[in-house]
Image 1 (tube, rainbow, N blue to C red):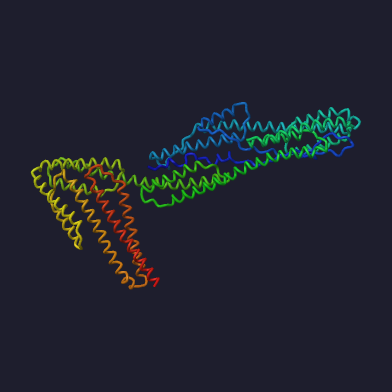
Image 2 (image 1 turned 90 degrees about the vertical axis):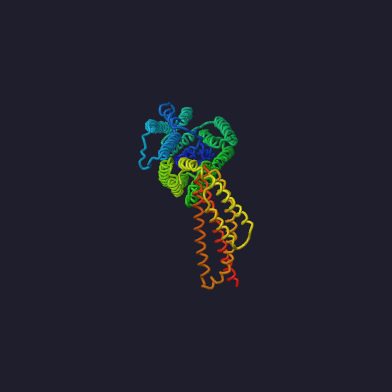
Length: 637
């Protein structure tokens, strides 16, 4: 009945999952410009160019991740990382943690909902320990220790690389102090340069200073060299070929469909470009501009890619905000009965399904907008649960009262005291009608049981009093005669129709019992005629009352300045009261289900009352319109 199980089944840990969609800042890594390269120069050439300072490594861009359906799948992958050969990667470890707790929280809330739906008290609910969570925490501890060990090893390696590069600088520095040996030690110098390139990362805080010192002594060494121009031109030509190949590779990346992959490949090309030696000065600017232009294309695509992601996230935020406003508006509406609750439950569930089709909002708002949506849903379903809990208690009480009447009817069903027992059963039937509603299926069952006990007695009484059947057949003819006269009344006109109808009704009611088998058919025919007569009479009477009311409006207006407004306010209150009464009757009719013809009388009677109220309400509405018309005429005059 609650339908609360529909609430956002996949939205439990949405605030964590959105981290995987966050776009990194675009880091554009460019190669050294031609004016920043180091190369062997003859003493006659200009000062050697310098290599740029070390640049920050680009941040990892988001990648597509496997969607884990169960905690076991997550645990298997965590164990594989914890005890395998591959080194743990921070982004995957964070993603696995998010995925596990998303499934863990969803499972825990599912158990809570099942407990509540089963009739459990939410305040008494206790969360049971999860063995999978303990295993997950233990394996994550192993991974954390491995990553810490990895970090310590990387830092140690950087310190060792720093020491090696400092040794290379000292060796080159020693070469610079011996100008006469410069040409002889050139090959050794080239080997030191290659060794320098082979050594990778050093502590970031030492990188720039280390490079400046290295470049200083390299430049000083080149100043001492007396290399012939042929050797120098050979190096330039070789370096130009390498840099042209790098330009070709960078330009080809523009065709790469995967923007993220192209960006990462470009970073590697930049690193290679930095490590290639210089080219002749007349070509440096040209080759550099070509490589830079190709880089700009890739960097621009990379930037546009994440701008598109951010634009979609803003659009998703607007859509989710609109859904929040719709749910909040529905939750704020007053529910007058179970029909209203169920109809609005369906509306909210449809909005929840629509929510699931919308992607992530911006990271800084994703959790907040989800919490707002969930709070509105929780408010609605919490109040719905309380309403139906109260209704359930009422149903239970009404069912007990009806069961008590059933026991009384069964105790009387075999009695032979026809008159007194018949009166008692009729009184029990009246009590039955006064009891409120119960669930439809149970109500039908109780009614059948109650009606069965009553019918058993009345059928036995009819069989025992078969001698009275002649009188009952006579009564049947009399009632048919009254019905025929009522039908003739519908074709007549006159001011005394209502009095005539009332006389015939009194005559009909004074006639005694009719044969049991004819009772229901006669009842339907009689009330069909009456319904038509009352409808016609109500219309006629309503017209006369409205005309009389309009004729008296002038007199009402003369009572005072606010007389018409006061009368209008009184009529409007009367109109709203009738509207509320109709709503109550219609709600009650929605819970009634009578499987026997004998029970139809209650429903028919309620339907007639509803129609009478609607007719009276229409008359009141016409009176209000008449007052409004009178006010307009006064203002125009």
